[in-house]
Length: 326
Image 1 (spheres, rainbow, N blue to C red):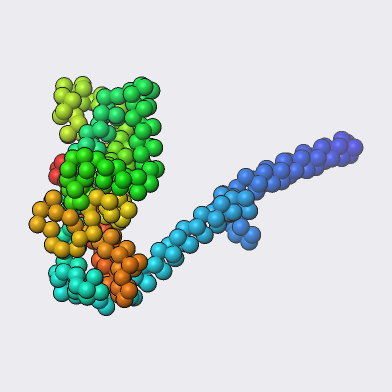
Image 2: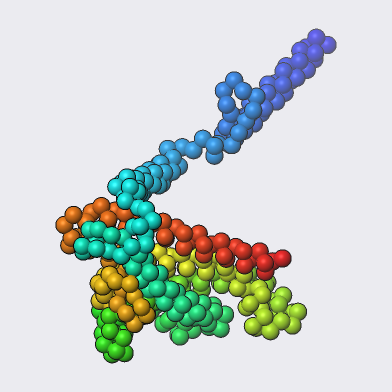
């Protein structure tokens, strides 16, 4: 009897030992898969503590972002430091004097706004219409669609000086518009169109197909579907293209030198020559001795004008979307 009890005790001890070994292996596996904080009752995933391979790309991305932000803040602070003291109401409303060393930028602002207005008035309808054609009426794999998209991608990378020479040859000479605000605005429209079309097309393609199927099931016409459903849903892409286009157009110099001209007087019509802010800054900083003070002030005005235009575009779009939804 004692031997049997001893054997039973040994078997029970072995089972307990195997059970404890299994539990230890399970705890070790849990530690490997989840990770634990020493001296803590809580366990968290290992993803919260990335290894060196995961940390390296993150460090690189943050370094690049911080470097770009620092460079931007440095440039902005330099412009504000040298240009803020020159800006007043007289500077914003009076015309340049003494080759721009004195006076203000009243006529320059008017010319800039007119050139930008011509550019947007021409590029927006053409850009949105072409984006609708490519996204809604053209197959992605069709020859026509591929050729148009490839052409737009090539045009987006063409240097601005090439657009300037084209605008001078076609708008200024062939069409007889000369050095004028109209020539400059049309040339900028040609530059902005590739960016605007591609951004708007991606916005339309990002709209779920359920919107189109639901509109077709309800019997909506193609025009109603575009206006009531697709256009509001694609508005973010349109705003992106608009902001990028305005940013490129308002800061353009090389293309406008050959089309809108250098004249700094107040324009009386779109057929008059007009100097944009970007050309005015270039001329003061490169060709006019003693013009750096007004160049800094003009650059600050250009930045503020760009922010105001972009903010206005985003605000109008959001207000329009709110009205459409309500």
